[in-house]
Image (cartoon, rainbow, N blue to C red; front, top):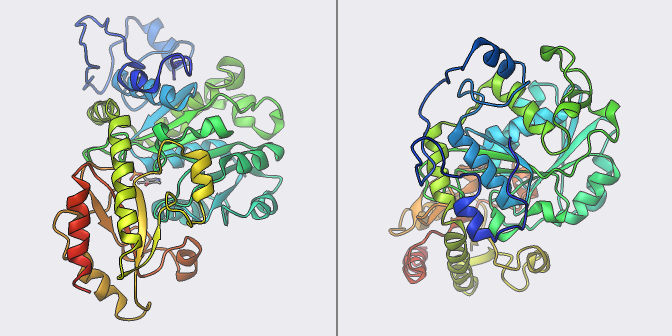
Length: 438
Ligand SMILES: *Cc1c(COP(=O)(O)O)cnc(C)c1O
């Protein structure tokens, strides 16, 4: 919840190694240490009382904050060009606490149809149980976003690059729609990564991540981060945002907006209420693993992006492949948006459809291909050093209705691919031998 390095003051590759950590702790550890402790000892009772009342910032109990987690928060905020961040136990938790904090009591959310399956479960099932209505819209349809907005709407939500079909969002367009309605735009930048696209530069006010994926980068640790870009002014229409601008009952007459202000009040609310009450805290060890991953983010993402494009180009002319959903390919409907938002490369997660009908035999034909892969692994993850495939219709997106799957662009023939760091020639040869089984 502390300020990041001034955006742009150092280059991305320097920030991914250094932001958020200055050696100077008693042991002077060159690498951020893991503070594997549940709680912190107070200097005095007066000190403890100040920390509990939010009069003073500091460590009290690891459910709320830990120094390892704080380094991660500052680092991701710096990479996104944001002002503050909250790190939590998973990407799901980052999406949940962000939207819960914005929705407050009685709020409504508008979200894209094209979302990660777990997020769809969260928004249409659990948020519904909580009494937070969510309207889903086609993210490419500007009028659909506009018409879905109600007086009680408190956030618009979409992925910068959607998983698994890799639709590229016109972030600026949706940000403008959100802002003309007086609400913030929240972007899940998990697939995009801050190396390839920084949604805050295109109008997004909050950016969330599943740090489990590219930030961690090695498939070892779950984590999530929510970044406040410091752009949304909750004070402009204070009656809409009582959770920020009104008294915070558990802290007497404290008003977060007055105490913390723009760029910091959001993190203060998320930590002191949603993480504190619901408990999705990031373990110090996972925070450390994710920090290790981030140190090589640009190298990994550049290589994975190039490998994925090579694989996509190969699959695009393969006779057993009906379609390749990769916005780096000319002719892809999102190719133009990819040029505008992703000049450094298109993310390495995309999908392709096998040839053949969608019928009772499809699952078996897809299995024939997937179960024949040797180099590429069948794993429900992305952004790992290992290349992996998944079958969205029977795995990540199996809870969606057929109509929802179609709206997200997923068929029974769709296979998701996430490029790792292996030699792309081995990936292509592996896919070729598996496709030959069809
Ligand atoms: C994986 C993923 C999530 C959920 O993150 P977890 O860390 O698995 O909880 C959210 N959004 C996207 C785009 C994802 O790929």
